[in-house]
Every structure is written in C-alpha cells, then in structure tokens.
Length: 256
Image (cartoon, rainbow, N blue to C red; front, side, top):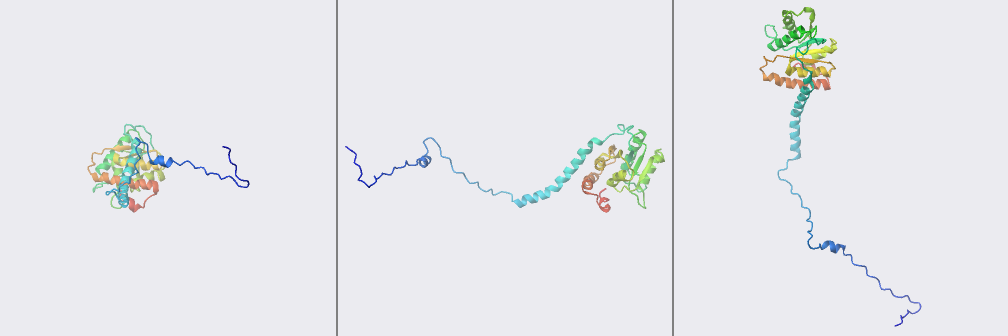
C-alpha cells in the first residue's frame, strides 16, 4: 500500500521514543538468588564501665612524678656504671688527685665508720701510685671540723702532710665536685665513696666536663636503708642542679 504523504504545510507527527527503563535500581534491590545481602552496620553500645577522662588525667598526674623519679635514677646508674674501678685497677693511674667525699664524724671528733672506709680506700690508692695528692672535702663549723678529722686520720696512716689538701667548702656532694673545677683546677680526679653514692658523684663530675673515675669503698658499715632512700632523693636533686641550675645553699644542705 502506497505511503500517504501529509498534507502540504503540515509537519508529520513524530511519536516520542520510550527510553529503556533504568533497571539498575531494580537489579540492586532484587539481589540474585544465592547472594546474601550485606547487613547494615550495627551501632556500638556504650560501655557502662568506661573510665571517665578526668579520672584518667588524675591517675596520670599521680603516677607521673614517681615514674620520672625512677627513670632519673636508672639514667644516672646506667651512664656512670662504666666509670668505676678498684684500687688495683687504678694503680699508677697518675690522676690529678684522689678525692675523699665527707660522710660525717663521731661525737669524739673521729671519722664515722663509713668515712673511715673511704679514707682507707684513699690510702690504698695513694700507696699504689694512683695519684700523689689527696683532697679531703667536707663541711666545717665552729664546733667540729670534718676535714680536720679526715686529715688527722690520713696523717696517722703516714700520709705526708704536703700530699693532703683540705676543702672546707664541700657542704654537699655537688659542692665538693664543683670545687674541683672552680677552685682546684682538677681534670682527672679519682672520687672515693661507697658505690651507691659514687653513681651521683661521678654523674655530677661528667656534667661538669671532668674525666672522673669512681673508686668504691667498702660497704660493711652500711646497715641503714634510710641512707639508700636519701640517696635516691639526692640523685633527683643533683640531676636538677646539673640540668636546670644550682639550688640555694639552704635547700641543698638538707639532702646532701
């Protein structure tokens, strides 16, 4: 049948094309058989036993100081342990001097048992040729003189008077070590004390750029645990002095 043409002057009417239906939504909505739908995420339930933030902060504030104290003590011990030697190992060391750190005297003016052990070690060092000079460092007041008692003890052991130097300004360990550099111009001292005390003394010397060696004295007469606790606190004090500046004299003398 011949196709009819539209009358002149009129446009042919075009039938609008249908767009194919978007089946993507339908497909995603209807999952094929055998495929499990993903479950929606579950909300986490708040724990009833959760620690409040303020309590965590409080615990941290309480624990921080003791943890720092322990770390400082461990640091001092770790950095000075290698700078210890026996009198035999220091024979003919040719050090600038042997330094005996004070430890108190008895009511009769003689050195305390702990101080006597330090002096005995210094005598052995001197006889072994570790140095030809001994500096005795301690405090002195009108009533009694610690350094005088130390000097007399050495003289009784036949140490020549010319080999003994007295430092009456060693009010504590920090001052005794500091005086070696500022007063006596010492660079390679041998520090004599008990081992628990030497860690701190050698640490102070290292912080002052001294090439110091510690020589431990006997600890037979140490029976007071309070002395060790006091030393624990003294390490913190002298660590602070080395890193942040010297404390007032009245504060330092209470710790040693």
